[in-house]
Image 1 (tube, rainbow, N blue to C red):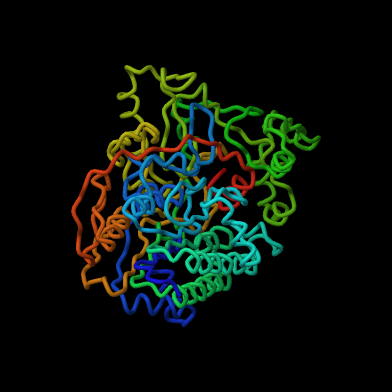
Image 2 (cartoon, one colour):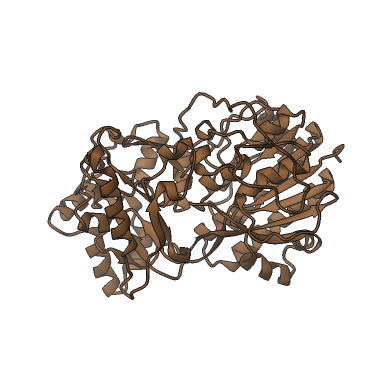
Length: 536
């Protein structure tokens, strides 16, 4: 038992009531069911984009991406890219703010927290961190592994098969063990643990009720044991977004932009990474992507593409005779992708760089290395893109987008310069946008389940008052934490305390001093993001 942890935050990635209610009814998650029954519960609206890499920094800084600067799993510099990490976050994490007020924290597995900064307490990073991440304090990960037997950021690092139920369960068990060890050792005022597998299982095993229930059962067991160890005064359960079936169409935005004359394709160039297995093996051996030597069959596939025999046509032919799926399971991904086209970014006017940032970037003269759109034509061109995309309909006549607009409509702050120029919000998130060049504009979604805007929040404890959580946003989580500790809210935070706590005053804090940027440069992270469908 810790001395007096005033608040425990349990992050359940992709948690939402449509997923949780059946689990409550079946008795699969008695601890979570009790927390929700005893507490105040409401829907929690995510931001744009409602994806892990952007949403968790919003939660732990209380600011929108226009301030904290993370829009996606990738960060772009010209036509170069890197996986985001904590040095790209421009606003103060809540545990560092609490530390400045004399309060200690233990933070485990929160995404985009690698490398860890200095504060009073301990931190083991989560998603986008490498498998052996730099933690705070130095050496704490080795102590956790000595005490708990093991620790892993990603399930695939263990002895169990990747994406197996056993792999999920073991990763979750080790997460809980780490939290218990660290809270007993540091006796923090604030504890924050995030469970990622509640999201991953939907991407890797969509519709697999056995796997989904096993993941939630494992999380529930760990939450129960953490509660018994920590005995927190208050508990806050939050999710970064929801999840659900994608019942509409997949819209290939870059194909649309090519048809409109804004984009150029090419074969055999750099483009976006193709994440093929043979390239991954090269990276594991320490080789650069540009050093990859194509295999004979890759060269054959490329030659086939040169005479019009594309992977799409091959797939259509196989599908016609009922062989597309069985053959696809046996053909390595490098063969499937060898003939694929890529976007010629330097010579295109506009393009989707990453589907997860939900937007189109303009290749602007003076900003990008080989900008194609003159600065004095920027606003007119951007308005044209907004109008063209807003008018897109599916073959059935449905609107693809709920809204399309300039980035200033969705974000505010000095980091808006890093946002895509045009933001595209799918209608109800029942349609999916992708960036590949694959022939047709529309297709059935590759991923039958994906993120939704609406997550969930539940609050219970001695300092939690009854109140309505209608209209709650992930922007409100950090201000609520401040209020629970009686700490002044940073006036830069965009949210407000949830109406279940006594609000505190707003105050100007010294500017947050960002750490020197470092590159993630880790192929394991890239592979993991690819496995989950975040990278194409």
